[in-house]
Image 1 (cartoon, rainbow, N blue to C red):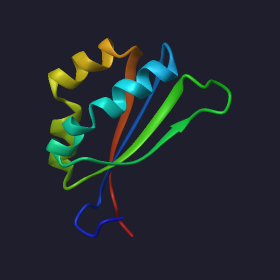
Image 2: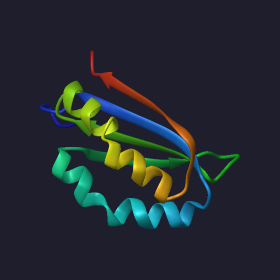
Image 3: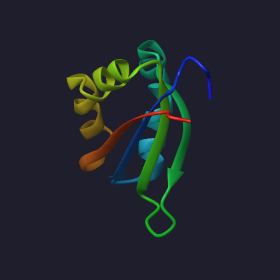
Image 4: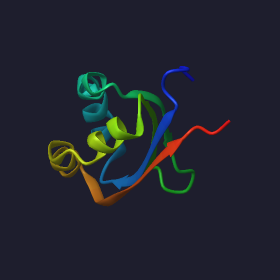
Length: 95
């Protein structure tokens, strides 16, 4: 983990179709980059391949919260097939 980025964002949600979501997610990497967000990994649930968790780093809790609360991001989530409201957690590294 980057020493300057000790804030983690964990977002979990179900999507209508993983492949459609994945294409949109990677096509919009510039949005995360511009916000200072670095994706560490994308994970699929073993029992439901359309349930995804994304783990990312942010430079601060404030940047993470602003990114997650961005209305444009929330509109995009619906556009790319996210079902329901994603579960989001912002966590600070303690050790």
